[in-house]
Image (cartoon, rainbow, N blue to C red; front, side, top):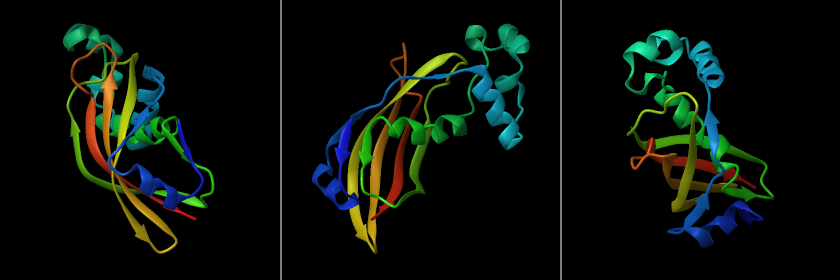
Length: 151
């Protein structure tokens, strides 16, 4: 894990791969909770019995936006800024859901700091993020994600 003292110290890592996160299991309970939180109860996500019969691989799949939202927890094991008052998810320039994430799968993040801009009281960082799906040659997600960190 990369540990820096301040948001400004991240400038030394522009253009560099920061690392790879720990593995995270995307289980049916997490998928169901996301469905409840977003009111997206499409059967491909929540109907385990129907998925056994009709889905490739016989499993439900995670919502693409669930996978995207997990970037936050995955980033926690890639880098840490010790002296920061707050971090804000600022958005994404590009997001592609390139492979289904079946229930019970494990994913992990490969993260590179693409760019950094100083802003009043902190920095705006643009990351290239690739979410690896264990056992697959295709990533589950690729994105260019923006995070702000403040002193």
